[in-house]
Image (tube, rainbow, N blue to C red; front, side):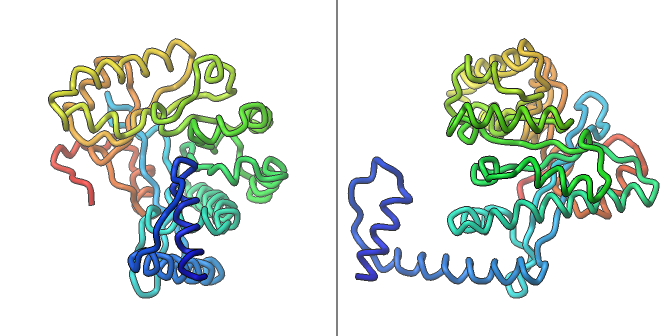
Length: 303
């Protein structure tokens, strides 16, 4: 029965197209590992083991930091610093994301407070909202309460959602995002180009910007056979965003060639290892305090 349940669980996770699934010993081990990670994450949330790193978004012409993205990390007591892809899927499948999301918002507000108290010039900070968080009952009230408690100007916070999250319930998404926009928050579509939003829906979403997914940026150099096609797609996405009056940000910019292509096609804001890896708050604070342009590091590689 336990093995049958494991196969059923895998079949559901693989989506509606998976009619059946056979149990394997590997599957059993994966489920055990996931369960152990889930329990450890529960303890980690209780023990405040989660922390934030921040990655700059820059004006690619000048290198000046325009804004930041808050990225959660888990300081695991045995495995060290874990990146989001190691535990966010578990947080989403277990429902722990509904505890993790508010924690990220609170820690972001606290960090903005610390920078402000230290006399450091503050720039807007972006936070990701998952599907479960966006459609959570009372989200806007909860967010406004946290922001008010820390005396943070809503203009200093940006919420990112994916296309697929918005399309799950377009009418509800429009209503929730409209409330957040009215409250003064900035909104953007993350991973743009990987979802399935129609143009009519996209034009009606109350967002301020979009982020071109890093997979498209990587393809600009990775696959010569598809390079021309990818260039045309990226150019079209930039044009779409600008024609809709949206701010366009390219994520995953890692080489000068990618940067130069984007700038030549009117995308001026970028985020990626070419400019900076995600950094702890004290490092970012020093960069903001200094105010100097970020140097371009053409040999940066993904850690």
